[in-house]
Length: 352
Ligand code: SF4
Image (cartoon, rainbow, N blue to C red; front, top):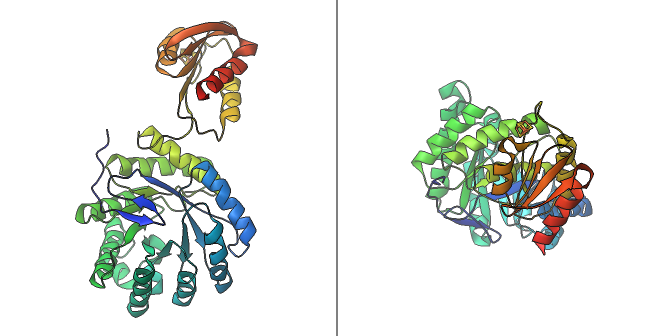
């Protein structure tokens, strides 16, 4: 069991973050926010995939003005992502948003940041205080020479202190660098010094395959250390993919459970059925189903009986056939061409 870091609890539009709450999964739309219908339809798809809080980019006044309608119809809390412009931040704060993301380093005006925080306090809006390696303030860069983990942590600690000094405590911090080790170091230093909830992610991780690996390594290490109250996997891919990968990471550490877990063997020279095809088809058919069960699909008798017994449903394959297991008990022998249908039928029975 992972012992999670004890953090203070905050909420974003009713979704609780920190404290003893489960790690929350977030994502970000890739539509133009002012295209209201397109943005809402993506938010709905993401919510169906398990996204619990959504962030939308707000680079223009037009986007900020669209927020009102988006917030009203979104099934999940909405965070406005603001960079550089306090003016756009103020427009966004009038829209009913549940949270706002700011990188104080790129607003760089303490007076304006204080005003934004006062407004957030009045309206009960949560802030995500962002520190990114790409937008670190000059004084820190001059001190460290480059955006090291220590530099990122120091910036995050300074701004957190500033927030608290002006009486604002409803915030979480995200410290993001695209370098995995820098990211881990920064979050670790910060986590040791405060109880402020952390949103973690490896920013600009890359395309789906490479980015998922990089995110799994970075987030996996942090989560194993108990760090991380909310996560986003950042991929150059459909945001729904980000949500799936986030759950897979959390599931593999026993921190969340969503959808089916598939255990399948890598195959080897002992294989006597087309296992990759069976697994591919089963995965495709079960995609998007949120049934919390474990399915084992194993290629031969080596390990197969044991794994199939441990799963809710299992196939222990042999010579052009398989033994179907249910809750640890063998149910029947099925031929190779019947395997997928039989397996899906048994899963369906478990659902009802
Ligand atoms: S279960 Fe059998 S086929 Fe699959 S990898 Fe192990 S030995 Fe090979």
